[in-house]
Length: 199
Image (cartoon, rainbow, N blue to C red):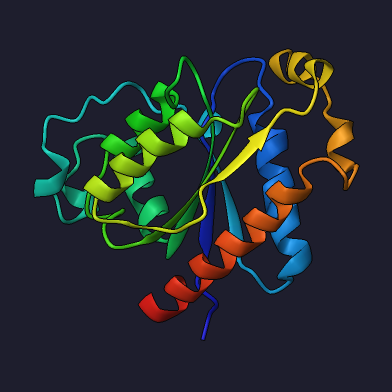
């Protein structure tokens, strides 16, 4: 039997951005501790979904064929193919980016019932964004897990490099985000258990 896949979503599309680097940090931290974990990167910048433009209401659509646009059908198939998700999101003005809300809003049934983990990041960890995203996932009847992981940028230099999209080589220092790494693994363990029960 194939191991169910867990999609790990880069929620930022900003140019420049640090989101892809931080998502890879999360992915690699999990993969190192759980080598058999079947993780698949989903980069919203690659998908580049337009602002929601489907004429139908997603909760009324139960098959990819019910969508009007080919890109939406492909997005539906992508999300439907995963048994759970890890959302890696920055915080913008006390909220999460429009890019992830837009990507979520294209679909409904493809998300429903699936376990989800949230990792936020920012100058103070992005906790406001995580709390708001949590409410949205609960509204979709997903199964969000705890803890909500918050990765706070450790220094002003780090914050500046992240804002400019520069190489965050300092993430390789295991003293940085030590608690965050532990929280990532704790949350992932719960996520993996829920995924195993759901499939």
